[in-house]
Image (tube, rainbow, N blue to C red; front, side, top):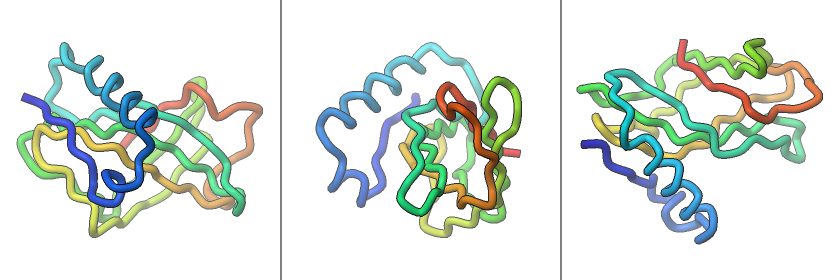
Length: 125
């Protein structure tokens, strides 16, 4: 059975409203029958350094821990890849059958500007 966990820094700093939103997203995946990794969108934003921030709930439905060692992620809007980057995040390990929120940061040179970043899809390639 899938469990929701928060990485320790998220757990300490997350606003109550954001926690409720993440719990709502998590509860919506209850009926998904999968054996892979799925990303549920939380929000997208551009920060003060013009980096694209993509916050997602990462669902590891696999039987193995998920780590991000040279993991290539693509962010698509309307089925068009607008951002891609290889991530190595040694501190991010998502245990089997765990969902965890995370924000992936795409620096300015790793994405194309688009009128809207909303309703995008993050995929592990």
